[in-house]
Image (cartoon, rainbow, N blue to C red; front, side, top):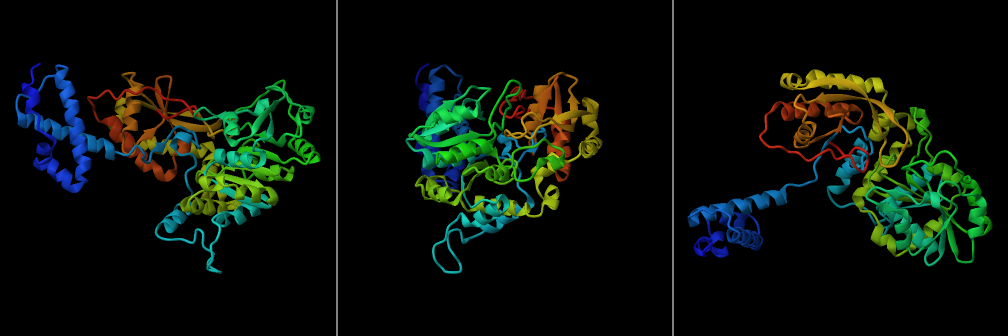
Length: 487
């Protein structure tokens, strides 16, 4: 093409002087808007040089430029972080933020974030305080631990503990425990970055106590035991009891670090679920340092809790990495309120959302599904075959990896066979609805939809599935990570 059309494009300053873009420059930072204008002008020039059709007049090209800048702003200010309705049946869904906060935790966060707080001030003495004291007493009382500190997630807790116990020393660990968690994040990588020298022992399925003993040398810093929370090795297997490994470590004056992954503080068998190791059990077995997550079964904010013997926790707390990995006031506020719930165990299922979902009888879930179907708009029921089916929910985030929790789902069968299209429509609803696709049908598991969320779910379903749309919205069935990432 010739340069005639290119010369019709306005300059940056000329475009910024147009009423619509001038208004944007006045509302936002002028250099910021002008940078967008500059970049969009360059994109238009490239398109024109490549032979793209162009408007024949400067005014039309200026209007196009204005539209492009507005669209750029819209994309910038459309947050990918949005509340969603989780109908995947995965209670602790990593992609959806894991554990939903209890009402008490939400209220406490709102209270603390409203202004200043005594995060690192001792109000009694007026001197500098320690932020971990907001929760350390509660944690120790619940776990019967001597001391506790908190990092910003469990990977950080493990990194911090290993760096303190095993810097430039060997950390003995069974090959069967070298786990990989979500996002291709591997325990061996954390151990390497901690400065520990990993010493693998045993085999994938069998590690004996003598394997641990044979590996101990003057270069050993600690023995590490990692709970395989996101999988199970079954069949021809062998692993010593934790107490046996602890006794061996202590005979050689070595600390034992137990990474539990998820933090379970109450016996899940009371809710009809399989046993999961308790933090209290690890400490009772003699583990010197125990690490676990705050945002899994514990039900709090993203955090990594470190509990154990005071001598070791004091060293971990003094590690310079502690400052880099510490939590802020909002995490401490939410964690404090969540931990307080555990002192009234009888009320936990009513006050703790994650435990409530784990413990709810399947019959109650079905009743909620029936209410949802009844409230659907007639247009939806006319377009889709809507049924209620028995389903299998999951704890998620590595907890109870083999357990399928009986549940019920509202199942939508599209007559046009375009399950992916309609699932995309649901993800674009307000609020977004995430289920999963199975056998070309959309499954919406009601175990992870709370009673107070059902009106919003019914409204979103009716609007998203009753309306016609010209866009395809096809993004595919994404079921990675937690088995069901959300259709």
